[in-house]
Image 1 (cartoon, helix red, strand yellow):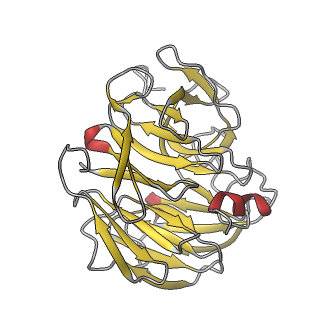
Image 2: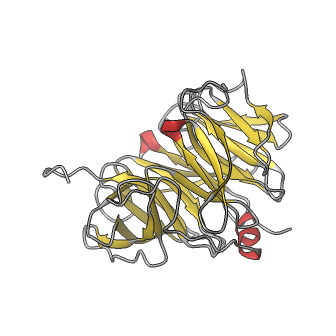
Length: 309
């Protein structure tokens, strides 16, 4: 059975990446541009193939269709190949009650969308036509920071940051299992913040409070970890988002330095860079996705500088 990233390569709408809705001429809004990279502490600046979208979350479904999530406006849009809006759900006033702080989204093999509703601590399931289908985790999740879809096994893995655990559901919303406990021990978690499923089925979890990535098998049995607290290549201060490519390259953000670290399949660090715009301004990475050709897609905000630029 094909992995999610292989599905992404099968088809892709030729999205005009410079024509996303809400783009401003000043480049401060939803602008997708090729990302350069400045080196961090001696690491190479290899950010080739990466792209950045500002102030919104852009993600592609398995058919290469683009969706734009606007957390501060509580809405989700499907885009056509020119960046125009096909449909839009949610409301800036939250009058429809659909989303309450939506922060990220993923899709399954059929194109259904799963939106991380951080404010309601639940997952909203949306059809590719914009119809709400179901809610997963209502009353079962104490908190929610991220999710990953395991397409081959038809499972959803949810990060419960405040509860320091991972909850697993079937894609139809049935609870399957839960693992993790608060602490700094070998098998424990402290504020897990990002999650993805690797090509070999292992679950990689950003253990934010312990400044590392924890790796578990499908049953929640700890396998290994990589990364530690520090400022050198392969070390973190406050790791957050994580994404894994079909070739098993792992990318992890760090909120303190504003950089992204690349690891190989064994957890060995190979690169670190700070995403930058063509005009040299740095971007604070917040969420990571993949483009249909398996490139890195960074959603973030302009980094603060002492000059206020």
